[in-house]
Length: 415
Image (tube, rainbow, N blue to C red):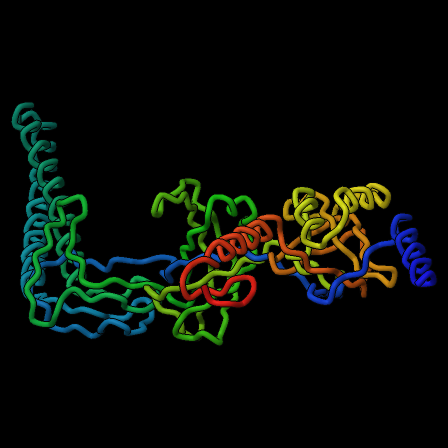
């Protein structure tokens, strides 16, 4: 009995001298290991053409031929729509005939002016008659110019009956059918009837909505990965073209539109497809990292001491003794760092050892460790203060229910 008392006294003395307590088997641990951490911003958007062209007709009449349909790929300059050209051709013939007559009248007026000048020089024609012949010649020349303009306009109107592709691209919308009669009041500001809509789909874009808290991390030229539901296992490479300067409200959340360009030479992406955009904003490769859940703040100290059954103030004292002055290094990605120290609980051969750790970037699951612990160290996974308090409240509630019929009491008997 005396021997047992001596051993117990020695044990208490060693503990009082600051020997770290040993971790209980119920606590989970994690190892500090080399990992790749990639920080991304995710956004949703819709595939849309970079540019959409409305194909209009300035001619009026019946559509005699419609050579394309929605989805048709066509080269620039190819005939797509033929409109009845009989009326424009008649107008051209009439204008050309009027031009010939105007030229003849001009030539006659010129001859009359020359003769009047000769007669006036010989004194047989007065000045008034000479001026009259000069005016008639001037009017005849003006009539020729007007007739030439009429011929040119009639020729343009005839050409307008043939609607050709303005760009190389795809017909994405068809608004008319063969046999339909169209009327095109070209005097309007937006004159002309919209026949088709075309777009060059060899390159498309996603208009992605990004939360205002993340928009400061995005810039033009940044690489992006785009996925669509139609091809879930085939990511598409994209690049941020621009960020719209004006915010949008989406369900009371302030968002900004970012335009992401995607090469679409294979033609797999189509306007209207829903897309998920993944933007990489920071990355660190082969760095020591720990689960983010293992990081503890100063407000967790008291709860952790109670949870571990440690003497109050023990963790804070151990941290004070091992306090480090290391600060996070500048890796060019400081905007994505925590910027604060945390503390971790190491499992060592001597027992538990609290230490400060400086963190780097995080993907929320894992956090980079700049200093404080080393690769291979074992970290105790402690619950947060909030979780500990929630567990305590739950135990109190369950304890209070021991008097409810059908519930077991602390002695295991039913009440």
